[in-house]
Image 1 (cartoon, rainbow, N blue to C red):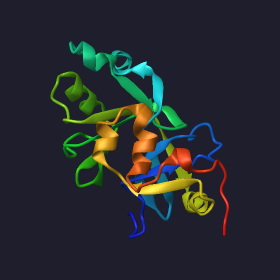
Image 2 (image 1 turned 180 degrees about the vertical axis):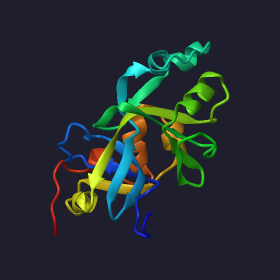
Image 3 (image 1 turned 30 degrees about the horizontal axis):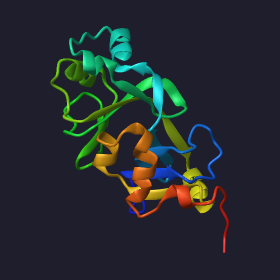
Image 4 (image 1 turned 60 degrees about the vertical axis):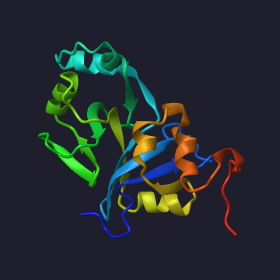
Length: 187
């Protein structure tokens, strides 16, 4: 269960000083966060796969060539073979978890079948892998100024081009990341 101080349904925006290549200039949507740790999906890293590649591997057909050509994201370094669909439109699929009132994450095949048939959610992002933090790890990284946090925004998630999401997410709280130093300190 998420606590009152949970960062679920928030973006973690990597600060310019972030050295980890998995997260440098990254934006992660936190899907779950509680005393046991946190789980999220990077929303601005493109994988080497298209949705057509993923659907083909799962033996799901689509006639929509634009859909088949759409990018699949690299959701994080943990279990990169596992698929996740971030979407609006509820949790009517077999394995869905509600991130917020308007956002869910689904891991079951049935949502991909619905998307391929043109009957899926209005907005969806498909990602392979996820980002995970053990108990206290994310809190420690926040104390070390590794991340800027902001409530998630559907326009950034579903409408902003991938290459602009890092800056767009930071602008939600009035921060221009290009103006920040590439190191962190304490007063």
